[in-house]
Image 1 (spheres, rainbow, N blue to C red):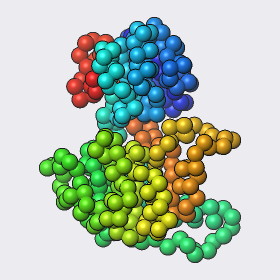
Image 2 (tube, one colour):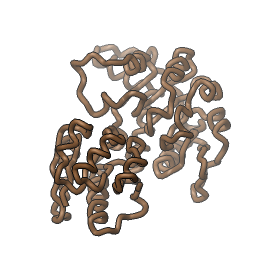
Image 3 (cartoon, rainbow, N blue to C red):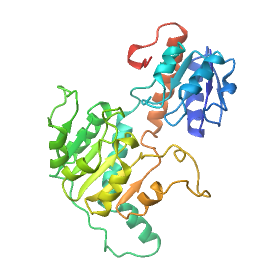
Image 4 (cartoon, one colour):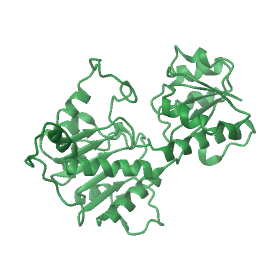
Length: 329
């Protein structure tokens, strides 16, 4: 079975090459270029393509892939909102994903963002590098004894809840489908979670229902001086409303590993470029905002798990028995 990997980074290739001996039936061609209508021809002769969360897996791309003989799309990530499932179904394309690689990796990054914006680690680091040892402007708050609101209690949300409990926080949560096995967490309505939480962390998928769930009306429900963290999907938050909320001093701090309009930036070095939009620049202009580049998943353990599950998905597909829990279509 031949797989063409698009938008391959050094860490991708290294993690997959480490385990290739365990999958002798599979050959991989690693490409630096990302998937698009202009690059689909590079998949000619392949049984499957492997794409990532930022790849273009739109209807025109899928139709073109089918024209090149590709029958399977392997997403080396949990999310698949960038995949046009209607076209994939029309073309008879199988779509497989990695639903759980290391929920702890993302949850730990979420807490790292929360701690960093709360204790102004980013500002303190820069000040000390300039030989400025003043503590002015670096005052934070204790998380111990505060209330953490977890929105979305899948595997990552559960891991975040456990971390917050470890910090001595009261944990409340909202999920359309509450998890009865989650102990020590009180499920409330979305409005109640937003209104009672000192720390709000988003861990839900992007759907029509969750699109822009954090906007002017829901921001107004939050406590003043709340800490907001998003390591899930950028479009859960309406960015213009978030920026207005920051300007209105609603937030003590905001930590974003994902944000709207990140597609052209994420995973790329653009230090010499002039950015096409002002969204990123505006977010970075605020002293109480930290933005990272969709790196919540980036641990050695997570990369190894992603590699194993992706190649096992390929083998299961090849043998005609894809796992239901990993099957999107």
